[in-house]
Image (tube, rainbow, N blue to C red; front, side, top):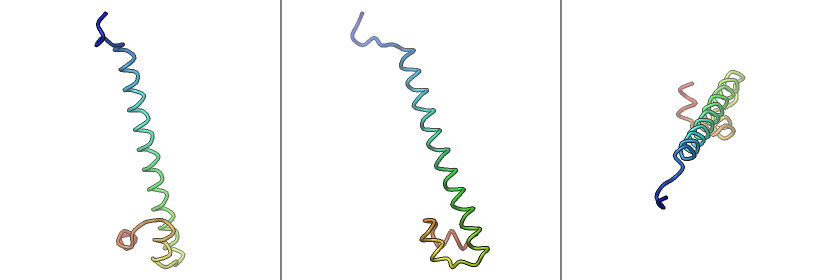
Length: 67
């Protein structure tokens, strides 16, 4: 057996696991961003000022003005 030989199945499984974890993290981040937007929209509806909403949600004033 040569030193450069490797377990191809193990490498593929490792790559699949890494891709799954990356996808999961991306999905969670998108969900959090969507929830922040939903909260910001609700706060706008009740009349809270843009600066307070921006500070609370981390959404920029420019983005809030587009909502």
